[in-house]
Length: 225
Image (cartoon, rainbow, N blue to C red; front, side):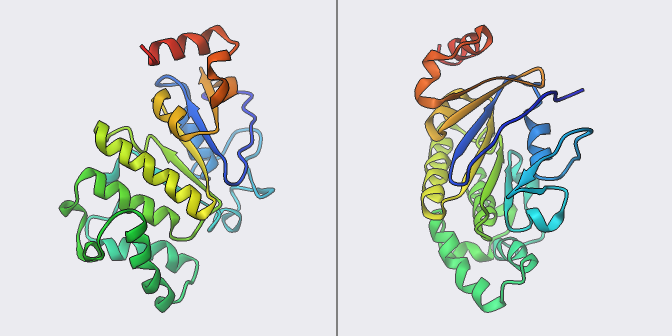
């Protein structure tokens, strides 16, 4: 059993961080939220509808993963990658084309990046493209699974600032899955702490210093050394 007795909500426009040690079940939880896996018991609801219903999640939730090198089709240009989710929602070609330059601008990339291929991008640039693709359909929520984990310090900070900006522009809720408590505290409203597949504690970022469980206290001490 990977996850047990998990129950929580993430409101639209909220940023909820999910933190925990390796093996705590964070990525499995992310895949369940995205409908990539089905729970043995229980339900995952988006807007009150079961996530396994494709129409419930289509346009409502998207994702950004840690491995940006495999997240974009290697033979797609940036333009093709950004157009793909809009085609699924039957956005007209003209509207999609009009939106491309705006998306690139919002993630800090020049319009010339339209013609670039993944191998021509740095790690930070590739992740910006993945974020632009995730917001292309203006979803209610984006699940970010260790989306900044493979980036160096300066680029990581830039991407966190970008996520804060995107959240402000679109009112998008973020489920920010990470092992990095400092990054979680920087971007999130609440933090959900996972331990061995269970919710150890949920706390407001402003009240992290007042967490109750011994495990949560220990995790915070180790992260803030």
